Structure formats: structure tokens, C-alpha cells
Image (cartoon, rainbow, N blue to C red; front, side, top):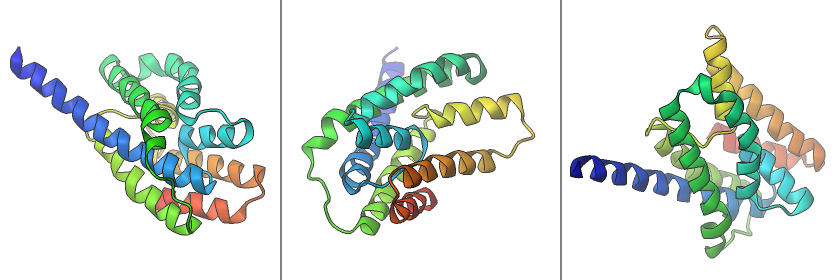
Length: 185
């Protein structure tokens, strides 16, 4: 019993680390430099710019219907771990990241820093057989329904559409370029 508790605490600690990296990348670099990102974080950043809604809370609200629709397709354990990570990372975005300095320099450097921080954060969470929900849920659910579809193509298409929407909405070609840079890091 004690070993299981220690193992669970280690997993949560690793998820916290990944979530902190994601939060700092999104809040302190991407949001501060006003360029679109991929996934539900990107949609939340669009809503943040349009309506000043908190990014983390918006991510949670966007995830509720998607999570409800995808629950059966993803499996209970993966789903529960992912919801936990989504909530943790969203809280980190709205409450912890604002405690750190916000980067105000070059947008290209901000895009690189976003990728360097958030990329490993997501990888750490994925290595725990989890995710932060959102577009991951949709792509994985679609993959389970249609296993012949390429996962890489689905992810790229989803990410491209979200970043393109942000670029078009804000008439920001440079922002589109920086958002796609983050996607490729």
C-alpha cells in the first residue's frame, strides 16, 4: 500500500512539473507575445485576446463537452489521468505562471521559448500515459474510430487550422509564423 502511494505521488509530481513547464510557456511567452498556439490552448489564447477570459479556465470549459463525448473511446484510466493533468495545467496557467516575469522581447524568441518549455512539458505528461485533453482527446477518439487514419496528419491538420484561425482573426501573418514555429519545435 505504501509503495502504491509513493508511486502515485511520483506520478503527480511529474505531472506537476510538466504542467508548470506548459503554463510558463503558454502564459509567460505565448500569451505575452500574442501569437496563436495549437490545440485548445490556442483556442483559449484566442478567447483571451478577444474577451480577456482566463486561459486555464477557458481550456477547462472547452474540454467539458469534448471529454464527455470522448470518455468511452479513450478508456477510463487514460481519461481520468488526462482530466487530472488538464485541471492541474489549467490551474498552473491561471495562478502560478502569473507569479513569474512575463517575457516582452522578440516574438520569435518567445515562440522558441514557448516550444522549449511547453514541448517538454507535454512530453513529460504524455510519457505518463496521459494528456492535457482538448485536441488530443479529439484526435485520439477519431483514431480509435478510424485506425487507418494517420495520427500525425490529424494532429498537424488540427494544429494548423487553430493557428491559422488565430492568424486570420488578428490579421497577424507573423503571429501565424510564430505559432507554427512552436508547433514544429
